[in-house]
Length: 420
Image 1 (tube, one colour):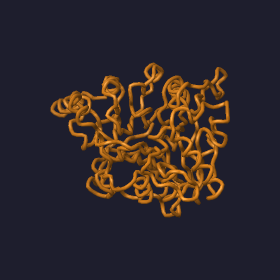
Image 2 (cartoon, one colour):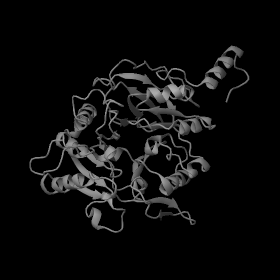
Image 3 (cartoon, helix red, strand yellow):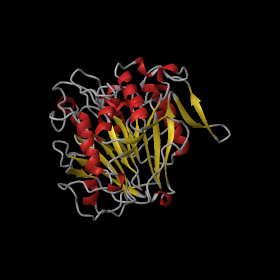
């Protein structure tokens, strides 16, 4: 709220900035109720390592798929998706094409993993069986000598940075279970992923589980200081076409039915740390996407940050998201296709009254040139996006890292966001 005692010159400057949007995505975004920030700027410096008590969420930008690294307050780590697609020069691989995508993921993860991890990821989480989230088979991929599966996405990442537990929506029966939408329906790469999982479980000590909806006991803190963080949890809120909802008696129930597409089956979770709330669910669309908005309405007082459904494609913002006041303060959009993000959806979002900052891992020159006014309002684009939540969960910042090399240099930083 602008108070009447502001000097006229300052008021005019503020109104000009708000009406024009943010002209330079590398500068701090405007926001609501942001406290003053007198910390030294980190722009141009390497992203500082995670420290005890912080929650880090990294969206890794290679222009070849979606992959996110989470480091929880006690050092527990989780990788959500490890997409790897083969594509042409339309969107060149970052930082270059000298490495396979899973190798780029591995080096990024190894750089930021806490020393206490001993070089291993605690949880690998696959939201759904599409190549831009699990990895694409291709004639050029190396083949595991004993397992005889191709190394791509998760299967390649496991060779370099092993994970202790894997969670997906179909294990262990996959296509033999009529209770779930068949994982192999839409992607010929799914059998390769399944072959990898079954081999690693049988021979490498990997633990695998089917995603369990409606619980905060599947993804839990495992570090030595886990008991300190009683205000942290990960709750599985949507998956396999169903979602957690509040019933008429006020108790939680599971509602929904099979959605007729792999995207509609996406699994997701709600990360809570003190006052900080974050929701992510792969490429969620259709009825489950709308139920996700109802879950947020019922259980989240204020959504600090949200990983966009379906890369902010044309079907990424459902009717209930529009009608139920789904209004996250920060939106992260993993982009690696010219259809990401849809300019019409971005236009719609910027027309809404709530204050928001939108970060994209990529921008497309042709799309941006045709929609300059829309992109001018984005808080940042074209790089890794890192959300860092302070100990206790009362405030957070967003950093964008340069993805043109592997120095992980900060190219922009937000002010401090206050959690509600």
